[in-house]
Image (cartoon, rainbow over all chains, first blue to last red; front, side, top):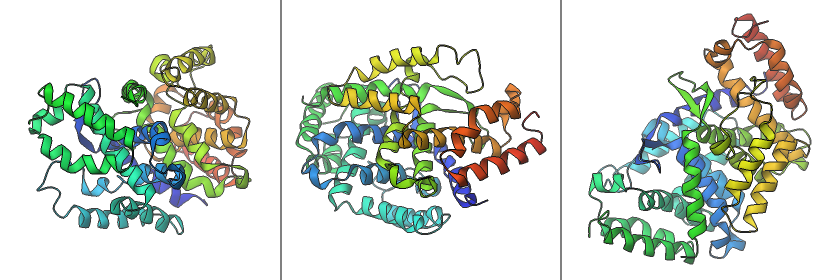
Length: 196
Length: 196
């Protein structure tokens, strides 16, 4: 069968549906998983693309492709909560190994293509990666802002932590996303969902 | 806030994570939901794109965008099992109303853009829609083929039903996908997962 490697790969990545993230779905019924999150940021990228800074330099296809595969490393490495400072230690090395394993199931050129997209996302330096990264960071921020913010209050996340991890990543990608970040953060500090 | 409509929309579509489909995840632990399925077909489109017939006429960005939003109508209309002949009656009209409601939450031009992508997918006549549709149909077929096939055996799905709904949709999009369909179907009939 000519597409047998591709079929093995798509079955292997099914495991991403079992990787739970910290934050909750909008209805607070349960934690979301990484497959769901990956889909949601692909929608978000499309609706916020008109607001990307220098969007003539941002390639929406590459952004979406990055977003779709950047979390596949979590199948082996697990999800690391953005505000878990201990968990963040060694994250890149763990995920790099996982990237080699998961993308290694594919033939070339797709193997290198996916691996390089993953690496580009992690390095956050190209226009595509900067926009993709901002989308990935603002999504759980929006979810927490518009719901009870349970994953923030559970972990006692502070304004400083949020600013450190999100503010620059979001504002460098889009003025309008930056505005939303500031307004929603103020509101959430005022509401007591974020510790001052 | 300049992106307030976009934020409302992304929160509204979160409900897709609660729409369960008939078939099961690869580990048979539970039924998959439509958000997870939407993500998985975006991966599948990328890895099978090299096998698309006349792929110079297939625009991968448009295919992925279609796949990402085509099931948003299920938030209101629910998922209809492909082999549920009664459920399929009136499906298009129900989903059309749902498409108008969900995409109506966005400003132009995105509202019409998404609506037209949804409609193009449903009509299955452009090269992009034909490839996207084949990807959407072959994904649950692969999942059932490579697992216990519980959603097929639960519903007593027959070879004829599968051929009617999938064979032409898949083979017209790709020779290699057509080959996989035939080989896996034979195997599944032999294994007794599909009723002859």
